[in-house]
Image (tube, rainbow, N blue to C red; front, side, top):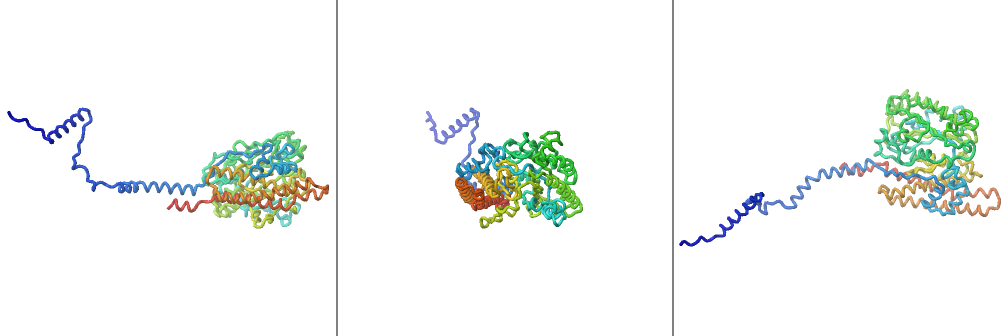
Length: 589
């Protein structure tokens, strides 16, 4: 019998592989075998480092492009976080702000209230939200693109005759006492909608907001327009003259460039907008303003004695206006179409000159027991080819002409006028007016709280001394110091809150600002303590009773508060309006 065949290892391995193949095939998952010769040797396999470098080479260009674009965008399209906070007109709001932001003691606040410098208590609550209201009514006349040299050299009937009455044969005008012309410095972008945002909120709109210039971008931040509409009339009217017997809320009116209605769609009671987009239309907006302006001026609060006004209007007090805004557009459109050195511009400026002269004559005719102010201003300038939008000197230097009626307290002859010389090196803060500086000034003139996000500084020269609450001219200094203290407290409260939600503001700059503010507050606190001490120990000497309000600490505090406000504005400009050129170059590189 033949011996059985012995199984060899190779035969067994072959049968095992066949079994695996069959099992895999039976299970529906075919098994593929790789021969040992098909696998790359270790020397042939790419290293991990080589693979990483290849992937990096593929991903680097898009990553670098995206990063560079992000850096450039952040450096060019500057942005600012908007807040929905609103400054309050409630009783006690001003004193609370002074205590929380400046650290004043309750006794200091109580003294300011007893003396009539603050009006947020029950006794003075009818005379203004924070401080006494200064004017009965206000007319704001915007001449779009009114460059400073236009206002100075090309408006002889209106501005020239009041600034230089003897040279123009109009010595009957009291212009030198009640009129002032300023270089009104705008901030880029010098586009109408962004400038109006700054002029009403006190903030600095950025280039990231410029898309809103094409309409539909209402203002969500606090503004004096909104405050004027929402603050109860009983909290902010003067308690004398025509305003004393006026029970109903007077109206606010607008006529002109419809950009205002885009920004404030519901705030104006008497509203007449005209389309502004067609730059070749030189007259439609201006003619609309000329049609409605005489009627609106006739209803200005304080312009005529109440009895005559009510007789003329049938006793309907709703025809009275505490604010009129008229926005003329022809100068800007002539610039875009023909340029500033064209006969069309000469003709248009003459039309504006006649209109302004007639308007200021109405202000001059107001009775001496009332105070009305007219603000004639340009929102921006224009280049020699008639354009605007950037930051050149011709684009940012607009004109501001301020004219008070004869009944307003004249600040020009005050011996205690704050000049900026009280603190060495502070005089420069009084030399120019930035557009946002008009915001706290308008607020105090009308008895309103300063808008929450404002970083502008009050212009003391434009704040008449309140007639009702002053017994002696020397008290004017203390009134000015209190207004500047509230303005500074409001600005610091905003900057401090902003720094806690964003990294835009450099902390070292904030610390420097706080040191300046603390120095001003210390002087102001010492001045209040000095006044309080003399008040409690007065001997009945009338001269002694009033002169202590003009103490040097009050005047020095005013100067330091102005320095703080000017430096706060400069910080805001560096952060929100000036391009980061280094970042832009890095992004491009």
